[in-house]
Image 1: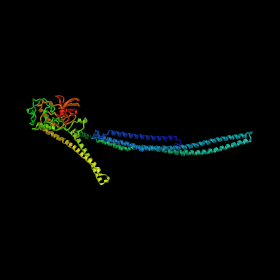
Image 2 (image 1 turned 90 degrees about the vertical axis):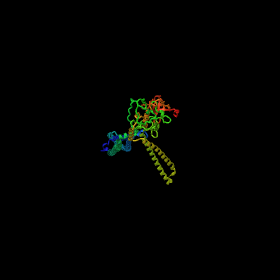
Image 3 (image 1 turned 120 degrees about the vertical axis):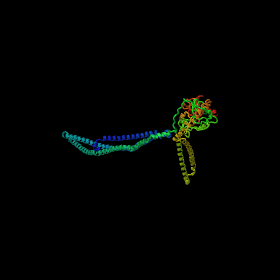
Image 4 (image 1 turned 180 degrees about the vertical axis):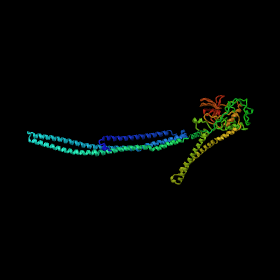
Length: 611
């Protein structure tokens, strides 16, 4: 099967077919090129998608990726980044293994096709020239034969005519002979050219054209083979990245299998655990039975060391618990020059629950000593709202609950220790370099390192002082956080001791912004004393105002001892914040109580404050 023998007369169709083959090859090249562009674009979009959902550094999102589900999602993003890289590899391999080679091959193919068809046209032109020569010699031979016949007929006519002279007859005979000779010469020439043409025609159809068409056939078959090889390479390029893509997908599956809901739940506990115990049950307050008081119980000199306080009948029912009573009982005693100012209301703390540890009765202990001891303990946890409103967090993290504060301090200590170790490594490196300079002065001046070494040593000392400071705070927090078993044992110990019978209303009193205080046990005893002296100080004058305040927010004031305020309302300040986040205010002579300090803007009267 050869184009030279089977398609000897289809030169034009073969020319069209080979051009179509080159067009197909170029179309495939264009297809692969567009595939590479799609792969690059897809990889870029995957990378942008992965980058878009990556956690931002030094942000809240970065802290969220401690959870196993978030870690799995982060692993998925990283695997997708690698997945995008494989698509880039596909694009690069298609470009290098297919596009570059095919582009060169197409150019070579066009040149080869042009050369073959140029040879074919040249052979066609040669055979056409031979054919024209043959036709020309044939027409000339035909014309000379006709001329010879006419000359012969004219000679015969002249010879038969008796009226024609002998000279004319001789002239006609010679003319006929010349024409016959010319016809013979044309015949010989035509015969020679015909033989030559037949030889060229045989060479053309049986040698030149088959040879040219065979080369064209081989060229076309190579094109077809090359196209098939390119298609195989196209598939192999994708096949090569399938194992790596499979590993990426396996990584995603493995990350998903590592998700542990229990671990995430424990991390939530570690992140938000405050360290406080939940409040206990609230005791029933019986307002139907009046309290009985004896003269000894109403006396200031009674040390309250004689057994339990017994309820008496006939006395006036108590209103608000101290220090939220109507006319501020005990205030004349506590605000005397020899006594500290009254304490702010205590909020919920691990021991502030009604069933928690109660302050035991102190036998034969002066009242003033008990109040002084109560006032010496300052709450360490400040108001959270001040942080939410943009205030700077304290350096010792005292704004946080105990457990969270301990974690933050421990984290800070670990960071400082790492920095100290880094500086010590740097000091050791500088010392070694200085020793090398001392042994080999040509390498450098040892004195040039003294300034740097001094600076590093100063940094180490500074970091150690900072670490000691945070370690002291950490030790303080850890000392204040007894184990759950110890807290319960303390609760049982206090519950076993005799305590005054009193309607305990300190039901986990907590400031609206989340701040806490720690002196509930002292508060319980003070409330008992305030109840005992209810009648004695009923007619005392109210405290003078030391300034004014403007409510920044609306506060409901539902807890015992608090007062409700409306945003924008102006009130009188009768006691400023003692460090627990509460300020005592008055609306009129009959309405006073505590509000969160962060809820009001205070304007203190300087003269009243100084006096």
